Length: 137
Image 1 (cartoon, one colour):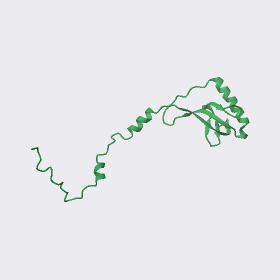
Image 2: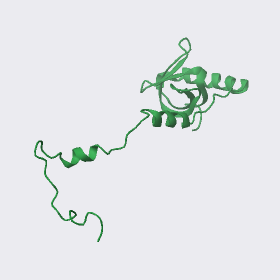
Image 3: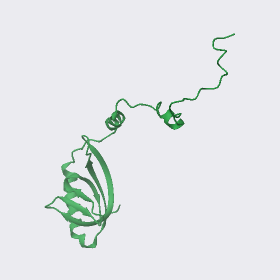
Image 4: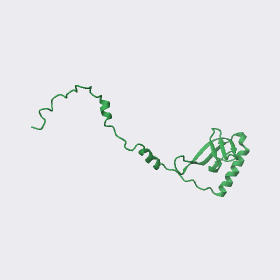
């Protein structure tokens, strides 16, 4: 004989004063509790990799200036260009180097941007490589 043997097989009593709680509501009581709201997001953000901006060599800058000048001369043709540039991260130090391609709409030396047909504006100082109308891709 074991303890409570006399009541183990009795039916479960129904409450008399209030209705039984629905199963989904009962289960919600035992759902995981996030004691530190936003902690997981903060950890993911800290783990996200960003690159540091590298200084471009003077000879590369001279070559880029020459390519931009050539591009300016052919801008009315809206040539297809591929541009590699540094895109700063909005949330932390650093950023990433990305390649973008599209038709060049204008080169604005005063505003310091290269604008593509899809309205992507690329700061001239962030460009590290450019292939354009007079070059093979």
